[in-house]
Image 1 (cartoon, rainbow, N blue to C red):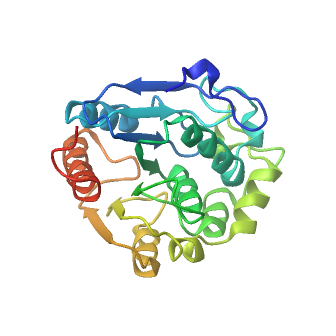
Image 2 (tube, rainbow, N blue to C red; image 1 turned 90 degrees about the vertical axis):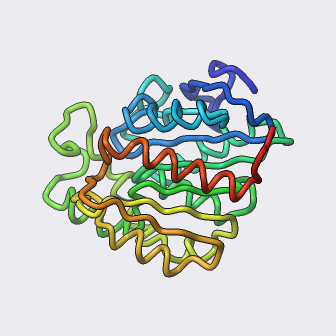
Image 3 (cartoon, rainbow, N blue to C red; image 1 turned 90 degrees about the horizontal axis):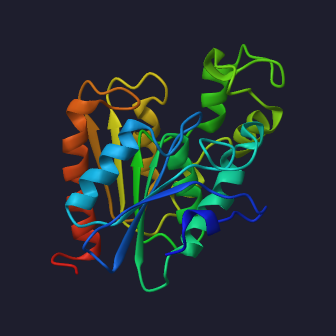
Length: 247
């Protein structure tokens, strides 16, 4: 595995990466965050730590323009982050089977990527965004692109490229139907950022081996009480997809 300082996207921007050792040497789990997030969000840290304890080696990374990765936040959107993810996947040794875990918009990036081939052999979506145009209208409909900010956070300007990209994609349902690898979807019933209907619709559209788990009372980023259950569910899905007793 290359070091974090050597993983660059196609534009030559360094992507910030953390690696968690695991004993299942034939696999690699890659974790991607949502919009305005980074690799150090508690959800991703706890999932990576929990899976590593169960033997699964994990990579957490920040998309370009986020966290300590190079690039401008204003350039961030699903299309650019798909390119970032491909750069991470290419850095994983070819003999390893790859699982990708994405949260929110990071899950949308995973669906887009998984629908374009078999570089990802197991897909896990956490509170995954599917209705991208609906998300932009619902969350940022009263914000002027290039002037305002995402959720009033001055470190996260709302750019025209972000709005145009998500409106242009519109919906990931066509991509969902193109996912071929095993797909686990997990969503909280009280998510007020990405409605659980997104995961339900993606589940119905998917034609691959699939499972939808709804966590009662959980919000968009879940919570410390649900982290353990999420890790256990993902561990079971990975074992089923990649085989038990893997070394």
